[in-house]
Length: 138
Image (cartoon, rainbow, N blue to C red):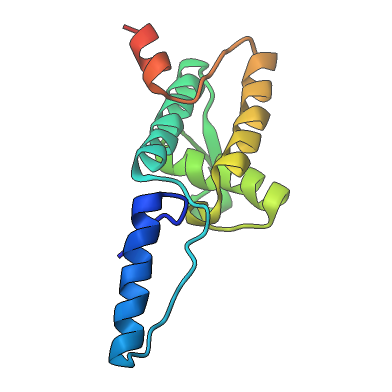
């Protein structure tokens, strides 16, 4: 059960549960959930990877890596390449956090600022997906 203790209804549920556990003499383990993103925010982040992938490919850029027998191989960008070789290195540099699961929305915004600046210098505007941006594209 996940309860938001900034919500009065959830606070009341929490108090009821704690009273129950005390009355029954139970042993409990309380884990504080980090300020992580919601499922919708996570979906938006992965949609953002798709947007970046599309823009890089539209710009005619290729991802180059050392492949067979040490030769450089160029390939189109994919969401996984964007996440692991563009987004994650920025994230690790700024926050020393490896997993995208462990970053919060403020940190996401800082990474978006870095990427938006880079694309802006190339004359390309990228926006993090939101209801407003998705409606405006129709």
